[in-house]
Length: 85
Image 1: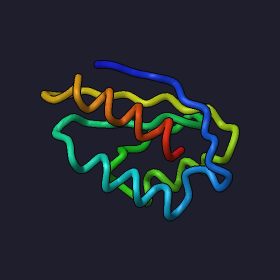
Image 2: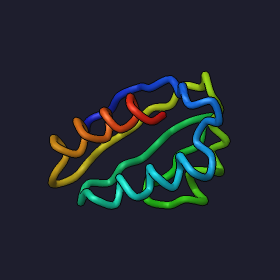
Image 3: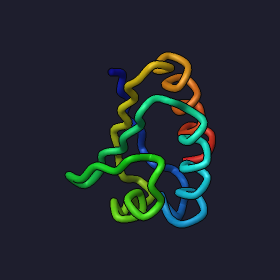
Image 4: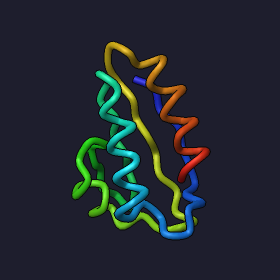
């Protein structure tokens, strides 16, 4: 399992459109991607679950990646967060 912390810079946080884009990106991988924020966890492939975290701009989340394509997934998801969230 690999993990990284990220401070959300997107002005609307992880809301409808950014969450939808994250779901699309996460579904490209076999590894499980879990986002932790506000004491809750959400699978990155589940839109409603992501939005229930209520993550806003400036909030810090932890992203966990675990699975068979973990190395590639970790690097690419980290880049996705840096570029989009």
